[in-house]
Length: 126
Image (cartoon, rainbow, N blue to C red):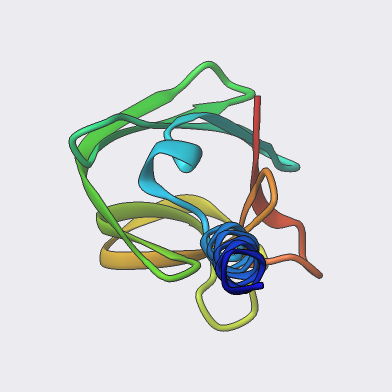
């Protein structure tokens, strides 16, 4: 009887551990290549192990902007140090020239990094 209780309790602990650990993304799970296609440009974002990232903005005219810096994960939010934003930070509308901002954050939702989903400002993992 005691062994059955111990096995049952162990099973419940294992199930809860798997469930809880599956709720938030891990650094390993979000590392990879992401892309966003806007009206005026395509943005590529590569999150690397070790917390570095590479951002590339490619305009229809052929102009390219490359940028690298660091990222961190807290819960379901990815924070980027120095980031080129191709949208107005208040309205989330695309702007003609990207602005370099000191930091930016995106929420992890499955295979998406989302800033403004309704306005289409999110990156999809490739």
